[in-house]
Length: 218
Ligand SMILES: Nc1ncnc2c1ncn2[C@@H]1O[C@H](COP(=O)(O)OP(=O)(O)OP(=O)(O)O)[C@@H](O)[C@H]1O
Image 1 (tube, rainbow, N blue to C red):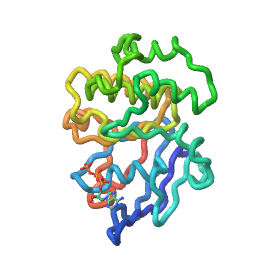
Image 2 (cartoon, protein in one colour):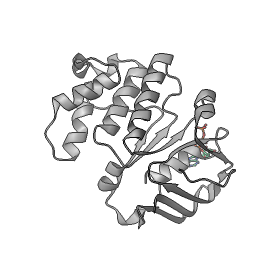
Image 3 (cartoon, rainbow, N blue to C red):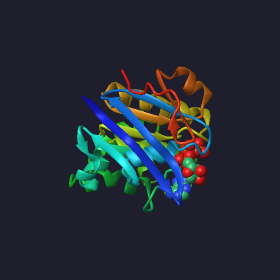
Image 4 (tube, protein in one colour):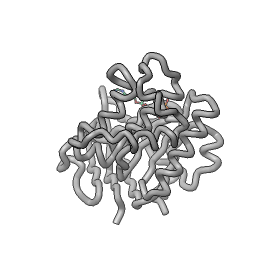
C-alpha cells in the first residue's frame, strides 16, 4: 500500500493553474528527489502534500485516508515540511526545540535534544544561543532537528541545502540519509547538481506537471 497518493491533483491561484492534474503514488520508505525549472511548481506540490494549502481539484491520500479527514496537528506530526528559509521563533534555540515536546504534551527531554544537537555537530551550549545570533546553516540544522526530534512518517524537504556552506550542507544531507534509514519516507526538492546525480528516484516537474511519469519509489 502506498503511504501517499495524489489523484488528479490541481492547484489554481488567480486563474493560473500552478499544479496540473498530478497523479503520484509514493511507497513507504521511498526517497524521491524532485527537481525542475524555477517556478515549475515544486514548492507548491510539497505544500499541497504538507496540507499547508488545499488542492483546488483532486484528492490526496495519506495512508489510504483522505488528507482532509485528518486533524491538522495530527497530520503535521506525521507529514513534516521543512522550509527553504526556516523561521525560528521565540528568543533562543531552546524555545524552538521545546516546541515539539509541547505540542505532544511531553516533558522536555534534554538528553534526547543533546543527542540530536550532536548529530548536527552543535554543542549543548547552543540551546541558550539567541536565534538572532546564529548563522543560516546553523538555523537550518536547528530547524531540521525541530522537525525530526519525533520522527514523522513523511519528511518534505524544500531546498533545505540551498545557500548553505559546504559543511552545513554535508551535515544536513547526512542527517537526511540517517532519517531515511530509519524508515521515514523522504520527498526532497533540490536544484543541487550533485544531489541530483546521487539521487535514486528523480521526479522532474515542468510547468506544474510530472515529466517522467513513472514516479513511485522502491
Ligand atoms: N499562493 C500562490 N498564489 C499565486 N501564485 C503562486 C502561489 N504560490 C506559487 N505561485 C506561483 O506558482 C508558480 C510555482 O511556484 P513554486 O514556488 O511552486 O515553484 P518552484 O518550482 O518551487 O520554484 P523554485 O525552484 O524557484 O523554488 C510560480 O509562478 C509562483 O509565482
